[in-house]
Image (cartoon, rainbow, N blue to C red; front, side):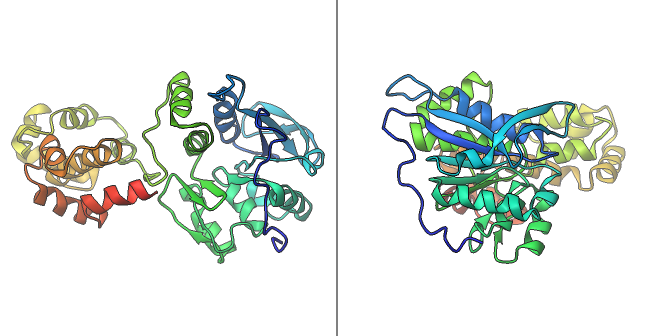
Length: 338
């Protein structure tokens, strides 16, 4: 369906002073945050040169009118057809449970294809990648979606190079993002590209969020995984204490003392509930902290190893290879390249 989509506007504004037109495409049963998260980012961004709004946003659907979301709130929308002949800077296809129906709606896909053919940038949030893939736009491109939809994206669209881990991916002028809040990370990265990093940081600060998550970061949270395994919160305070005291000797006896248990009983109960030994858990938390420093600071490997309790670079390197199958230096290089 994308045979004619070989060119797109080099400048989707009528003049340098016009705001950049962002068009969101929605359909029944979208995830509300998939829309309002990026929409809020673009709506907050001010052009540093003029002080005016950097973007002009529109929410569109095939039939227009009120569109149901996965919450009690429905949202108003304009008809997609009214934007077919306009100059579009950024096109965003929103995700949701309704994506499985939308990706088989030939009339909707045709409209999206026409919008994308003249858009300077084409994006999807979460399972919106399924809809974008159905138009053929993602053929031959790297793409990501919510981890729960990656298998569907692979099976339904084998021409797409699906990657399960990143928060968002930019391949040429096409951007795809992982689940829900990752759409905000992608939108902030787009603002940084268009209006500069200081503007994006200002938007992030006004929304009380952060800009530390680059596209190369994983959409899987080790902290969340520990919380899921420890559903009763039995070891929550222990995990927090470990993360705050990485430089200490964190042997089994020390950890057991923190929860008022014998070393033997603690080791048995912890391993049974968390699925790994206390020593492996400490190594994972140290590695997680080191990853964060590699992503967000310019500290050297020796400094990071010391701060995270590895004591030397070689121990940190071995931990990274065991848990991530990549060395710390290669991990940092990959993040910066992404």
